[in-house]
Length: 65
Image 1 (tube, rainbow, N blue to C red):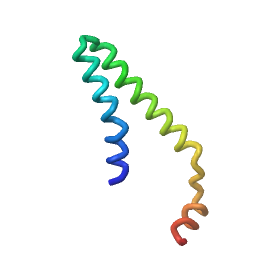
Image 2 (cartoon, rainbow, N blue to C red):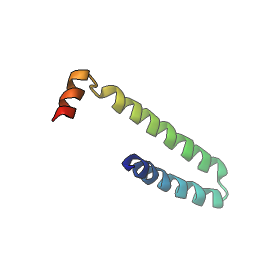
Image 3 (cartoon, rainbow, N blue to C red):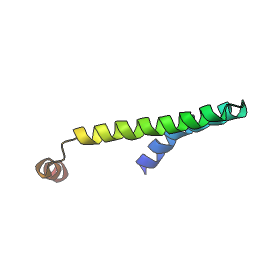
Image 4 (cartoon, one colour):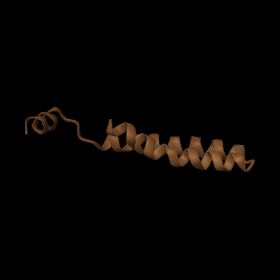
């Protein structure tokens, strides 16, 4: 449930910005802002995920405590 709120919290500002820019007549800028933001989010998420140590010993220790 928390991840849903986190996702909404990071996407709503991008949505508002894109709508404002599109209303001003810069549709290309609105689309590029949304696409660029999503690419950035996925890239940072992938880097964070790849840096995490997910060895079974650490996971079982964390669950047992």
